[in-house]
Length: 140
Length: 119
Length: 199
Image 1 (cartoon, each protein chain N blue to C red):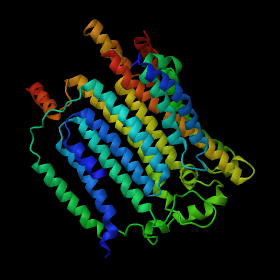
Image 2: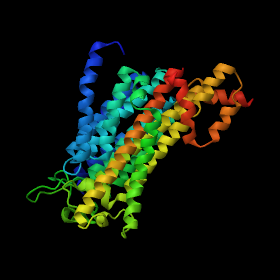
Image 3: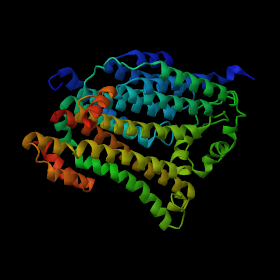
Image 4: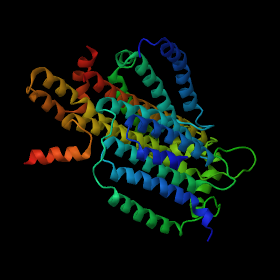
């Protein structure tokens, strides 16, 4: 697929918009449909498209395997970390009211952080799993 | 008893049974996994259809006072879908490993190979 | 439409077509979810079911081949099992609440609280997001952990053993050291794994 001009140019045009759309879905999840799960999948889909068209090795230069695994773990860490922070601040585990002086702002901040954690994990896991399947093909 | 009000359950049961049939009757492991995901989607449809309220709208708060469908099943299924794809990936990676060990993904042939090895 | 696609899935033996039809099935169910007011779910199903899982199935097909052999086993017993199970389930639905009725028990426990109170308790309009991230934060954390665990599982199955496969190819039965490496901590493996495909 690497020498097909239409695919290469098409992907190059599409990928920035896919990434932008994923970020829109992530940060607009409070107001419309969307959130960490969807945004993570779409963000991962952009990189998977890149890997399909330009080859997995090229994609790994952009996004090393170790970084992707780190992302998968980091997201869970962020999520649990928010819970621990709320514990330290005197609330229950994952009770965002205590994050700010105003409970409502605290909730918004908490949801933002937690969605960020979900986003990171889903993105990392999806790309890592794809890399695994793709790398098998190269070995054989 | 309003029989028409149960049609959504019957649609769900039909899809579920098709998935179940694929799962138990096909010998090919990839087909089995696809059948499992058909089964899974039918359960999603069950939950979402139970959350629907006639004349309701999507649970995103708006001006005025519209009727909202029940958001709780949506949340459950939202996470279940992503978990579902993660477990599907796990199943597929098992299939790949089985193919490397046995050279086939047909259940019958795997069984024959096992029997031949035991003798 | 969904039923027709599901039946076609059953009959087809070309697994490539099966993968594509599974994607179509997901997309159709996403449309159904939109009609049932679950926009967030439809969004996820369209992105995950029609996108990622189709790619994963295709990736597997590239590794294991895409023709299903004709099954020799009889299909009478599975059909019987399915019919019996299906009729028991249909019998069970007669006690279920009717579709779309606002008086159903599911709509009278915590759902009204979420719909009425979340505007000033959480302060964001999308109730699904506020339930997901705040009221049911424990659940979501569990789910995140589950997909993380699934990733670790896939890594152990697919990533860790790849080195042994290559070393077996290269040097025959001398796979002892990498066997031990398998038992080690999964996060240790990337160092060893990166080199074979980088080079």
